[in-house]
Image 1 (cartoon, one colour):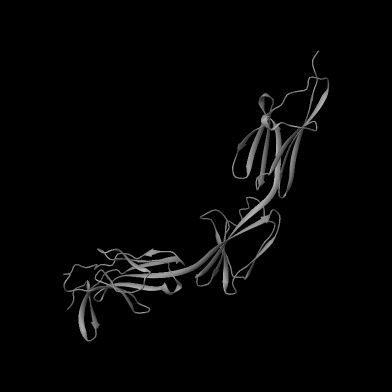
Image 2 (cartoon, rainbow, N blue to C red):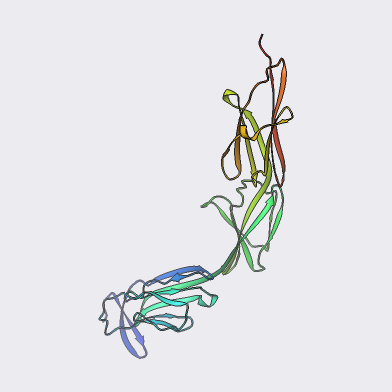
Length: 288
């Protein structure tokens, strides 16, 4: 009678004992052309090295890859990372590498690796704010849409077309958009960059300082200040970058020394999508 932690396994007419151990199972998803290192392949039970054989093989094809720390396969993309314990590296992964890899010591399974090979790509799209776009997925594919920041809700849409209407800057409806085949072997991620013409806000701050906040994508090719239809001098403007899409320009405003002068100050910015401007109308009276 066998003990409680052992099993009897009939192999080719002979009876062998195998201790009941939890088989380690791994799932690796790798991009075509990448490199993966399989877990160390060594006996999980104590045995004399003389009476056991540890092998690493691809179980769905039966290909023997390594035995007792020696590389057997003649595949030039297979390499040994470490000899003790035996670690196999697969370089420049191809679709044919997909499958199940097993490390065994005699009849004891040390681990199983399920290698999934993915053909993924990233597509960058530049669209103008307010526009609509239609994206095409595979005939047997689905859209996986992450609707907010990482960790937020995810919805799946089993249609070949995805229509996105009225796209806006800082649009949080579509944080991540992926077209995937149902088996997950092919994925296309769409990164949508919403472009827009400059928005300009001109304001008076303390000590007669003028502040012009400009947001645009891409950032303006040209900025200009106007003082009663006269162009301002660039050397009097101090610029600070707020972030990737916004800048701040600051200038000292000098009041005209005349009676009842109405002064109009304008800040203007232009990029490839249009012009934005804002103005302030100031009036001062000289005291007598």
